[in-house]
Each structure stands twice: as C-alpha cells, then as structure tokens.
Length: 95
Image (cartoon, rainbow, N blue to C red; front, side):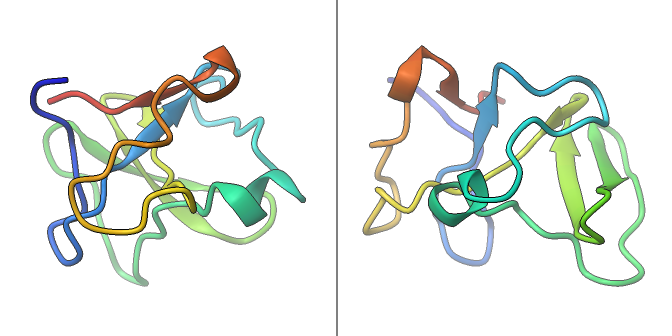
C-alpha cells in the first residue's frame, strides 16, 4: 500500500471518509462507533498541514490537508490497514 499517516502515539493507521466535506463531518452518531475520530487534545493548534475542526458533537478532531481523520475499529495492531476501501468511501490517509 505504501506509506500511510498514522497516530504517532499508537502507530494505528488514520483514515479519511470520502463523504465528509471540509470542516463538515458526515460520519456522525453510529458511524463513530466503527470509525472513532482522531481527537485533538484541548489546546491543540493548527500547524502546517494539520488543523483542528470543532465538530457539532463537541469533539475536536484533527484534519490533515483539510481531510478529517478517523481510526478504524477493524485495525487490531499498529500498521494494519483493514479499513482501507471499506464501503468504497474510506481511505487510508496518505502523507
């Protein structure tokens, strides 16, 4: 698959959702059970390609190059990319 963007702390792959719009997540409610957002801690600030989006559900979520980032509950260990291609709408984030 080549290089993917991963959480530095856990090594788990991060994903984008094709149905999201910039700053407007389409993954809400039950979707978040399978695709938890890559939450930004309080005080996190934008830097370079990285921004923080304040969702309506009060979660502050990281975005990379304007694309909101999520984890996949299908991934069981660092380096897994089992969420890539799910429903034709989930893609592993690329550097």
